[in-house]
Amino acid sequence: MMEKNWAHGFDLHMLFIDFEQAFNSVNRRQLSAALEEVGIPQKLFKLIEMSLRDTKAAVKINNRKTRTFGFNTGLKQGDGLSTALFIIALHKVIWEIDQRGTIFNKLSQICAYADNLVLITKTK
Image (tube, rainbow, N blue to C red; front, top):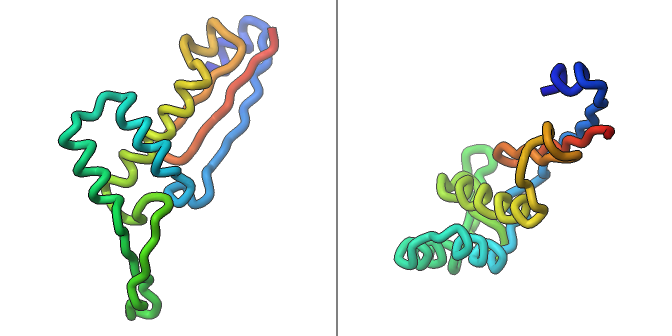
């Protein structure tokens, strides 16, 4: 991508973003809206909502677990479903920015993988 743009006289500028505490930052109400928008079947949607209700966790320190505590924000750390849910939430955000096309036919593009983003822009 970089070589092709340089060959045509365009400078590329890239900003790399790594979300800190990505799972903790997910707004559950916004996630529900994102799940509906991508067409998650109602039965699966309800199961996901149930798994996010009354969530509890414990911290392991020196091979000992603390007392459990409840939380009602973000996603569960270490839960296989959390990764997929985070990606769906991130997809909704990127889609709202209108990401049709590629850097070859527009001035900016966002590339995402897991909790990492690259914002790419070029000169005209």
